[in-house]
Amino acid sequence: MSSGISRRAVLGGIAGGVALASGVTAGPAAARDREPYVALNVGTGGGPAGSDRVHVLKVGPDSAHTALVLVPGMFGAANDFRLLARDLVAALPGVQVWAFDRREENLADRSGFTGPDPLAYYLDGRYRAQDPAASAFAAGWGLTRTLEDLRTVVRAAACDGRRRVVLGGHSWGATTAMAYAAWDFDGRPGHRDLTGLVLVDGGVRGAFDGTGQDVADSPEEIRQRLAAIDGGAVFDLTLSAVGLGDRPESTQIWYQLAGHYAHHDPDSRSVLQPRMPDALRPQVPVTNAALLGILVDAGFGWPNDISVHSGTLADSGETRGWTDTGITPIARVAEAYAGGPAPAVWEWYWPARLSVDLDVTDAYADTGLARSLGLRLRHAAGLAVPLYAFQTSYAKGTIVSAAQRVVAGSRIPYATYETDNGMNHLDPLFAATGHNTLTRTLAPFLAGLR
Image 1 (cartoon, one colour):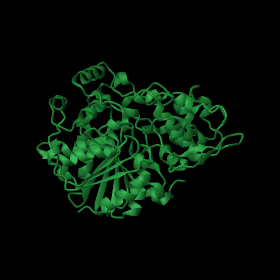
Image 2 (tube, rainbow, N blue to C red; image 1 turned 45 degrees about the horizontal axis):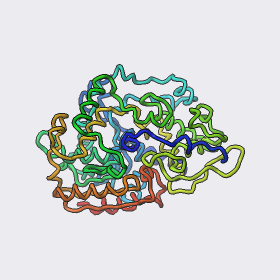
Image 3 (cartoon, helix red, strand yellow; image 1 turned 90 degrees about the horizontal axis):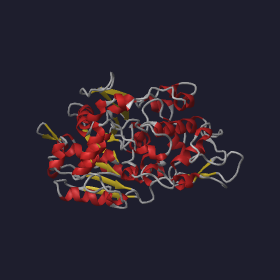
Image 4 (cartoon, rainbow, N blue to C red; image 1 turned 45 degrees about the vertical axis):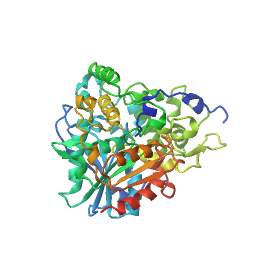
């Protein structure tokens, strides 16, 4: 979802933003039935039984002549795109959206969300956790593994050449899409599989420079990071900085629990509030919906890359509720975050090697460092498909400027650039239909592809 909490910065100031001293519903069942979550077998990756597969969430008609394959960003998963996909399909019936879940999603135990007490199942440690010490296989789950898996999805979406395939993604998912386009698949450039590229608040060639966080891609930094992975640090722990636990999956579990209760019982007093860490626990009683709002709204001190513009706590009441005042209603966030059990919004076990490879991909060139990591970024100059780039306030303009550098150094025939500085990094995924600049501008781009 995020490219890494301001590129793996340690969060600061959050507790102060959450210290409250003073103070959309789910789609119809018929629509959900038309949104299958489908498994595709992929190559062997050395993981546990059942992990040699990926999944796609399909939204829209199978008769569509264009498939838009979307890749979620860091810690993101397929349900990031469900609401966005519904809006796109409604605006453009000739499109079907395929939201991609990486093989890492097979490691998550989401069965507790089908039971009577998800809180106890997860917060009391009853779930099946993936032990990093027993996960040496994940050291090899880098960008090469991801792109080989993604190619299976792209080929399936093409239906033996009967459909156009547009590849895109959000944040580091956009970086992944660009890597695919420049990749050498046994002599065939990845972009030849595609009709277009869609970058949503991400990319390459300095796309994240505006966040103020340096890309950790010097040879010495890469050497140190690879040594840590070899030493057993196979999963990225960036989200532990939120303060909701120190396991790879801790924060993601909390977010999904918050979404679950906010979606299914929004107006009741929060069942999670008493279990929250002291530094993050609201100091007044709040509802389930309000607790989710506190965990995701930018007004409570969260960084741009993990927040939305939703609303605020109600002014009064023995138990404070939530008042929507922004472009992203908390009910839409709740519907997406609830997931349950799959697809979900948050990936639990993000491989540290994938973080390394995506940082090196930022240069978007066939460098010695890239080659040493097995990254086959050989065809950037040959890109010859239209490109769409959308930026929020997240990177302060560098998403579009980076995309322009890519276009200038390639054979891309034309590009569309859009900006909405009233959005934070996650708003394009969940914003209300009428307030989502992404869907309003992306639909014409997709309609114009030939």
